[in-house]
Length: 87
Image (cartoon, rainbow, N blue to C red; front, side, top):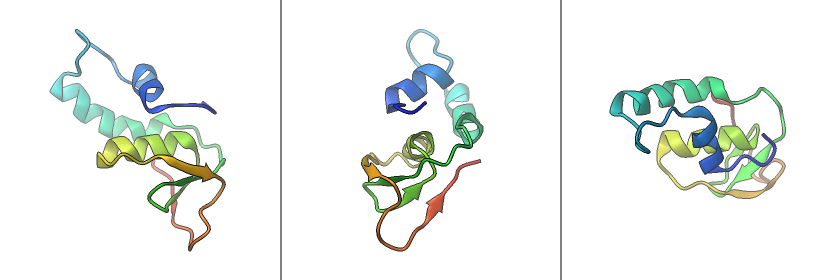
């Protein structure tokens, strides 16, 4: 999962039917994506200034919020750390 992209996240964790998510499955993904990411601490700094515990958690936050959060750099953000681990 080291180089997990937003589209990789969907292809690995979402069940597709006719190339579209069914509404019920989309809501289940929001619940499941809390459990889909590994508990590996490799912090990344999001473009929103928040430190995420790993790239997968950043990607899950992007899906949950609908905000296009990118990776600013690997490692913790320089400002006061707000570590987001999604369970």
